[in-house]
Image 1 (cartoon, rainbow, N blue to C red):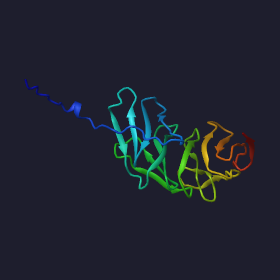
Image 2: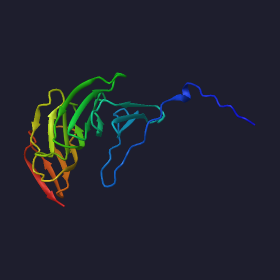
Image 3: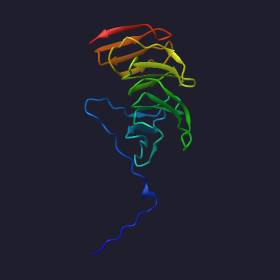
Image 4: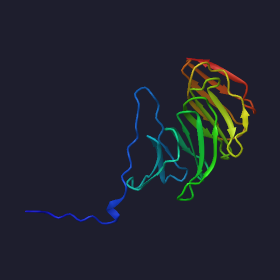
Length: 193
């Protein structure tokens, strides 16, 4: 006997790829502030999926180089995604076309992690830079918020305290965790692991 299958338009949703992982490297899977979507990077795309129905997905494919990390802003209106050559793209989440808000080159090599301030105005990034391994800047202008120095090897993780006065903690391959307490984020205290 022959069975005939019919596909409805509802069943024909695009199938998005699963996250690509690399042994020995961190991987970020993040959610939006409303708790409706989660996002991750895969290949040259940032994939946004619905939590309730993961079949519903959309991709952002505007990066020239492979994105390495992406995170929602605390307001939920923007996503900041960073790539393998130190570039950062900030784009709108409220429209289907995802218009670009800003694009900056902040490090000299791959960015491994990033974080937003609670007002969605400041961003800190870290990675494998040539002269510097982390950077803090304003989302709107790209102007530096302050210097994040002290590490001598690539920085794998960074986090910003979600309220004032801002503090930034970073962890590096040099076995140090640095805590920056200053309002200009330039003084630091190192903890050796």
